[in-house]
Length: 336
Ligand code: AOF
Ligand code: ZN
Image (cartoon, rainbow, N blue to C red; front, side):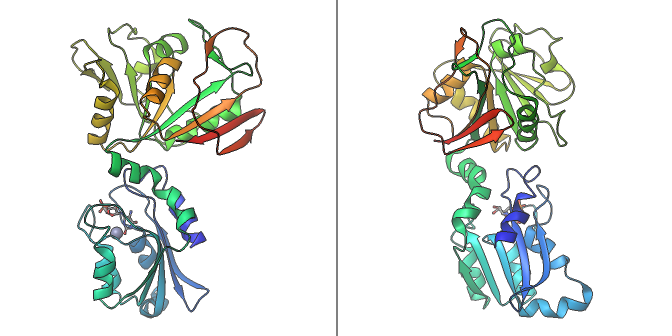
C-alpha cells in the first residue's frame, strides 16, 4: 500500500479535480505483476493502468492476484467505464484499498457491487497516510469550493511587506518551491495592491508544468494592461465591478463586491472544476479569507530578513503542524 500511495502522488499535477490514485497487482505476496496510477484527468484510471501493464506471459496470473488501490474502485460511468467491471471481468479475487471514494454514487455502492461479483474486499489499510491524496478532492465535493491554500512570506519581525514597494523576503529555493505548488494547483488569486506593487506573473516559469488560472481582484479596473498578470502565459480572470469585454486569455467577470463576494468567486471556481486555490496576497485579501474561515491550509515562509516597519503579516489562528527548512527560510504548514 505504501508503494500504491507513492504511485498515486505521481498524478498530482494533472488529475484534479479527480483524486490521485495508485494501484498494484500482486501475485503470491511479493511479486508485483503490474502497477499504475491515474495520470491525467479524463484518462484511464489507476486500476486500468495496472492491469494493462502486466506482461503478456503473466496475464494468466491476474485472476490469482491481489489488487491494492489507494481508493475504492469506481462503479460509475464518468469519463471512463467503472473499475468494478474491470475487476470482475479480469476475475481478480481480492481487492484491498485504503480510503473510500466520497463521490456520490460511489461511496456506498462500490463495495457491495464487488462483493456481489464474488470479490473479497478489505479496506482501511494505511488510510491515514493515503488520506492526504484525497484532501483536496474531498473538500471540493463536500464544501462545493476549492481547497484553499494561503501562502505568504514574512520577515523576522512579522511584516509581509511595505506599502507601495516590492519587497522580496524568501530565498530562491523557496521561490522555486512556490512555482512547483503553482504547477499542482488549479488557480491562484491576488488582490489589486499586490498586482500593482509586485507586478507578479503568477505563472510556473521556474518549474515544469502548467500555470494555474490567475485571478485578480480589480474592482475599478486600475491595473494597467501592460501588467505582467495580463501576459499571454496563462488564462486570467479579472474580478471587477465594471463591464468589460473579454480579451484573448483575459476574462472580465462582473462581480458584486458585497458581503458574499468571496463565496461567489469560490462557487464560480467550483463550477469551473477547480479543486484547489492558492491565495497569494496581499495581507488584506488573505485576512478576508481567514476572517471568513475560508481556508484549509497555510504555507508560510518565515524569513531571515528584518523590515522594521511595514504591513503586518496575517496571523494564522492555529499552531503549525510542521516546520520544514527550505535553505535559510522556515516553511511552516498550518491546517485549519
Ligand atoms: C478509480 N480509480 O484511478 C480514479 C478514480 O471517469 P472519471 O475519470 O471522471 O472518474 C470518476 C470517478 O472515478 C469518481 O468517483 C472519482 O472519484 C473516481 N476516480 N477511481 O477507481 C482511479 N482516479
Ligand atoms: Zn475507476
